[in-house]
Length: 313
Image (tube, rainbow, N blue to C red; front, side):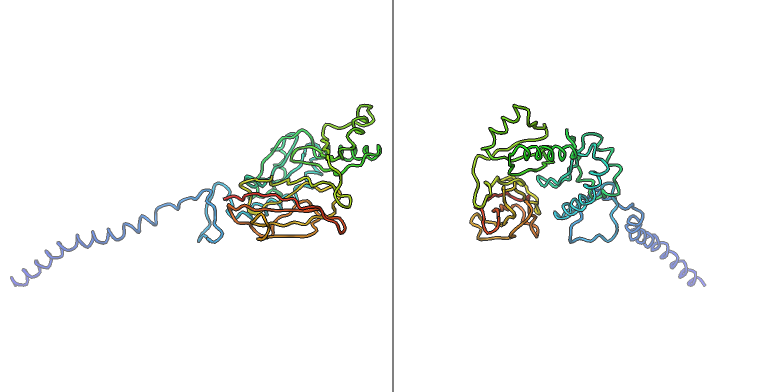
């Protein structure tokens, strides 16, 4: 009996010694898991989503995500302009000054008003998507687009009635003005008409004179690069390359290369009917590109005009 009692006591003592260690061991193993479960999920704010990364769960944000892919902003802005431009021209003609995409130093959608621009855009949230809003910039201008178009039509008609032939006409919304290109030889006649008050030049109209004659088949001299400016840096990887119109030209040939001799051509198109071109694919970053255009009319072509720019890093 004494032996059984001693044996039982020894077992109890062993359990007393071992149990605290087991409890402590269990607590040290569960503690990390407990902290992970109970800790709040972090909120990620304004983190760009890379094109090759797919988040396992939606990312909570308090600000719009800015796309990293350089083609995304341009596509978004182009789609927005398609619907927004005619809407503002129709509904806000008394204050709307025009809109355009600015490509350098970074892509922006510039929307111009003579007044109340911010309040006016609030009415068109259904057209301006949340993804576009970070790229929108409102500017104040002096003249509405309707005023520019009206003055352009009237002045061109007045020139026609006075027998003065213009080389080109264009509303430049970025500069909030109308540009009329005339031959230098007509400058004296125009001055005489304005002094005799037979012709009134609106404040919205800027007159540009070309001092040269015409080039082959009635085409005038090549004005040069418009956007991006020749030698520009930090240009978008998918830029809209534009040039001033060549008087008399009915189309343009375009080439884009990575060398001045145009032996490494990366893009080209013939007989473009517009005065701008967007490359068919994204350009390389931090690279100098050379581009050239020439005017076409029937079977005649002008000399090539060459420009260059460097893309963004």
